[in-house]
Image (cartoon, rainbow, N blue to C red):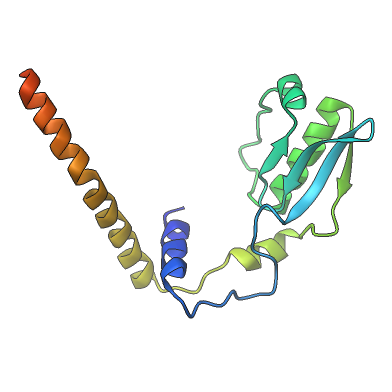
Length: 154
């Protein structure tokens, strides 16, 4: 996960970055499937495995326990679509934009060296520390006014 954060951070700053494939990269436009109950769409599942589900349907199924070996991407999307359809008594309609796991994995790859990823991660952490510093100063000042003492350096 750390490497994906670092790669995304590098991509955001790389104006010359060109995706390695022509596979769509907008997660909420990459529909994997829809679950329909009585002809009504109650859930839309995306290639990355995320889903948007109707409030009533969500209340009905709760939060199904995912298998520990479930992969992100189309394999996870397929599991969610099939599980929702089974629990709701609906059907799965696979979208024309559905990807295979290998197509999706290709899209998710990045070509950065270990050194680049490690340096990017350190830069992300430094940015976070810089953003947190004013809040830590404020917290220390408020703690001093109230007479309490807390270590916020951790």
